[in-house]
Image (cartoon, rainbow, N blue to C red; front, side, top):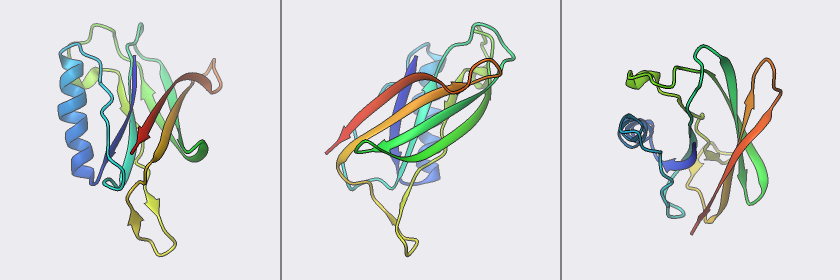
Length: 142
């Protein structure tokens, strides 16, 4: 349904985005929307994937591949289990967030993300499927 890129600065910012922007939209039956971001402002990049299951109880891996200017720079693998389509429990909604990516220099200092083209590709891996491409999101940051 939705694959979004999100920039933030702290784990607290990330958690607020998930709880308020993502979970509240999902609870209201909405799709999580892509926002725009300014260059040289944020030090953390992650992706969120929202989907709807048809049958509960299937284990899967979500593989998020992050690209900067067309170059693969980071891969995050998240384990997930599908839930029932009509689940009313907000914590049983099918939504998963990747691990956070940061730009860290050789001295260990984290730098803000510069202007450029950022992209995430999502792959699904199950017992039956081996890295099946699902969707891509591209975001130009200026």
